Image (cartoon, rainbow, N blue to C red; front, side):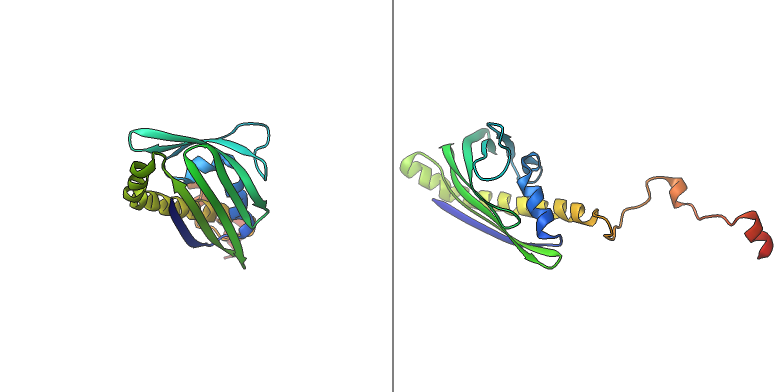
Length: 177
């Protein structure tokens, strides 16, 4: 079984990062090569939620059904597969002021006995790279969300040219100058 852990510091509060990961609609936005993460029932987050998963692996798509087995608000989300591609994973979030230390930890196994083990070893650098990019994308996406919260400093440019023009002095101000 392959094992990968990715740790990263994100410049956004733990509540922001946790909420982003907890919202299943975001999962395919940051997880590289994940093409499907859909609820199988009415429960869409928290312990007991279940998702149908599809992940591109070269010319094929690996499928599985995962159950959320751990859910602690702003602290952890864990899952394990009960069908298809075998995986057990956990997101852990640790608040550090306005920053969050994130850990993504996953065990995975390709089926097929010895051939599957060899494939797993050969694929590990690719899987690790994809997961590293996924956590980096999560960082970028949640830092954008975090910087958009009220009172946060942003570096976005004005939306229109009119907003970027200098304010002209009123007629009275011009006369008094």
